[in-house]
Length: 461
Image (tube, rainbow, N blue to C red; front, side):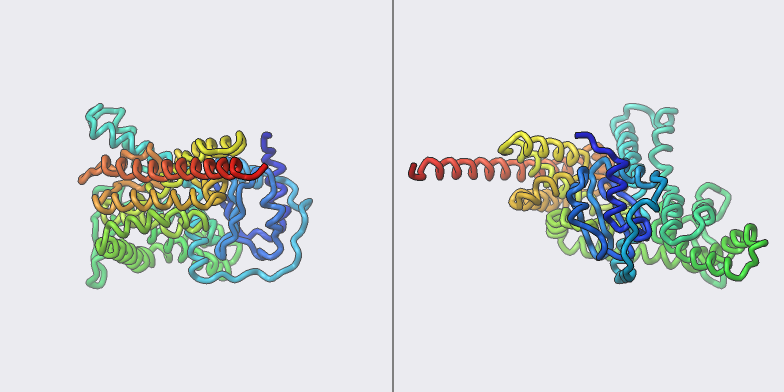
C-alpha cells in the first residue's frame, strides 16, 4: 500500500506533541531527528505503529524516527503543512536538559545530516574522477576531466559554507552573516596573491588553512551567534539592518582569524593525531573493534559523533582509515540480510529481506537492522562477525581512503585509490565482511529448518 506522506507527517507531529514541542528537527538518509522540549509527552506506541515508520529510537540526545530512504518526502510534507494549530497541543511540561556530550551529538547531527545526500553524491563523482585519472581514460587537461574534477572538489573545499547554513540554523544566528564569515575564511584559497601566513605580535597566523575545515567553521558560527545576539540588544532597531551585520563580521572576523581559527585548527590536528596514535597501537585490533561495533552506533543513532572524525583526518593528514573500517560494518549487515532472503519462511519475510538488501547495497542499513537482523539476533551477530573480519583486514593492510565517504557503498570504492592505493585490499575486506555473514545466515537458517522438521517427524501422532 502506498504511503500518504502528508497524512504520515501530520500524524507524526500530532503524536510527537505538536509543533510547540519541537525545538529542532532535521533528517539524515533514513531518520527524522528531533530535539524535543518534553519527550515524556510523546506517544511512542502510536508512532511506532504508523504506516511508514520502521523504528523509534529514543536516545538521550535526540528522538529519532526511522523512516528509510523516503524520509526526505516525509520531512518535506512536515514543513509544508499549513495548519499546525489544528494539531493537538502538547501537554505542559518542563524542557528536558541535555548533558554536554548529548548536546554535542545533537549539534553535530543537526549540522551535517541535512546535506548528507549531496556529500554522498559528490563522493561518487569523486570516484569517477579517480577512475578517469588512474585508468588514463582521459587526459587530465581535457574539458571533461576538468569539469568532473571541479564538481568533485568544490563541495569539500568550500565545506565551511555548507556548515555555515546548518550551524546558523542550529545556533540561531543569521545564516547570511554566517555565510559571509565562512566565505571570508575560504577566500584566501581563491586569491594566489594573498600570503599563506602573516605575523601579528610575533605570532604567525595561517590564512590558507580553512578549506574543508570542520571545527574552525563550527566554532566561528557559534561565536558569531553570541556576537549577533549581543549587538541586536545594544544597537537601535533603526540602525540594526546595516550595523548588526557589519559589526558582527568585523568583531567575529578578527577574533576568528586571530584566535578561534588557529586554536580550532590545532584542536583538529590534536584529535587527528590522537586517533592515529590509538590506531597505530594495533591497526588490526582497531579495525576489528570499530567495524565490529560500527552498526551499534547506527542502532542508537550516534554515528554522527564519530563520522566527522574522518573529515578531520582527511583535512589534517590527507587520508582516513575510519571509513575504511566502517565500510566493512555496512557490508556485514548487508551480507546477513542478503542471506535472510534464502531462509525466509514466507513471501512477506522474503520481500522485506529483498527490500532491506537493496537499501544496504547502497549503504543504508537501517531497514536491514530494524526489519531483519535485530529482529533475529543471530543475524545481527553474524553481521558483526563478518564486519570484524573485514575491519581486521583493513587494519592489517592499512587501507586508507583519500576523500570523505558519508554513505558507504561500492560506488565510492574509487576514493580508496591514492598515493598508497590499496583499493584491492578494501575490495577483499568487504567481500569477506559480506560473504561470511551471508553464509552463516544461510547455514543457521537451514539448520533451524531441519531441526524443526525433525521435531515434527519425531513427535507422536
